[in-house]
Length: 549
Image (cartoon, rainbow, N blue to C red; front, side):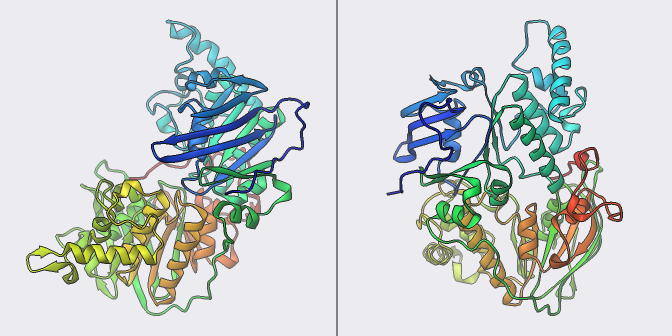
């Protein structure tokens, strides 16, 4: 049984009401108890963090607050008033806005059209647009949310699209903003600018609820933090009175190693040699613009960069499944032998035969078949191996036994190989893919976004397995948008921007600020201190090309 939740804020019942107060919220989906007797108090004019492992119940709780779900039991108070929030429109009327991790914007509409969508004043759009333009101008000035109201969403950077989502909520008079993993696709400089925006909103009396798995962000930006575990609220504390180590232990229920424990690399012979690699997709867009690098046995090369700058295409090309219709140039050598880039021997199966393992960026689309069982997914790509076959037939019993052993070694929960992949949490889905690829003992492991959407306990586990593979003398190409992950795991770091390698650094000789500049396409560091990031008025960061698969 979890310990009773401690409440931050130090207010008595006679004090001014909280912006949000949840009392005894419970919600079940069949036999799964997603939220159990949740109490939460969010003081007005504060930034309140909510953290927890995958499946802890954070998203369900926020969905209840925003009207997507109705609680089975419990009460919701907004500014001291008990409310029934039956849908998102009721939440908006109560002054609650939500900025989702995946933005809810119409890509071929303008900023202005997206702002008023669903909030028009009448049948005639012209008066609504004219009114919205003036309000938008005032909001953008007041909160440093400058965007061009006439630009189409599809032409905006991720950072600017996020601003539009915040402006949408403010246009609808939101006093309480819920942000779900808001920095997942931002450069460090963009994230810093977002935090300045949040501080400005707080100064104006707005209340912010921040859902994030990044403990450093919790420590930097929040006033209070609540920790959820297995559907229960286990603690709510003042951020200044806790530490990342304590929060991690509260989340997982045990001590967690937050830093990667590894010895210096001992690089051996070159395993992967990439020279002048180019790729143009079927629409004529140049995705890779002369990429060159080496990876040696026993080292990890990390590729940093904002999503959409060619990393996806690089992994897919190396893994043997480039975009259909794309044109490829340059050369790749694996253990000294040239790889076919465009012919019949350039497929993923051939890559695996040459000793290349691949954990793709999107586990649900490229790494798993969600309706198939765990034991079937563990065999995918390797189902023709001799140990999985008896003559012309697959040996399902052998595959199932292999899957059970891998699930045991990689602590996949629940440990049931007959469950469909979709019935596992994101972290356990990732463990299935990582187990399949690492246990084949590849000479080269391609691993994209290894801990995206993964809770802190699973992050620690996956990092250990990656380092163990390196220490066994294997070469690893790591692609991640998480700079902390890149810096802690990599022996060398290369930064990609707009399909190019902008520079290479040793983790011990660089900073997140310097890498952030390279991620924004800025190589001249003479006029920028690496620790300063990019000034708010600089527009390079805000207009990163969107690329991507």
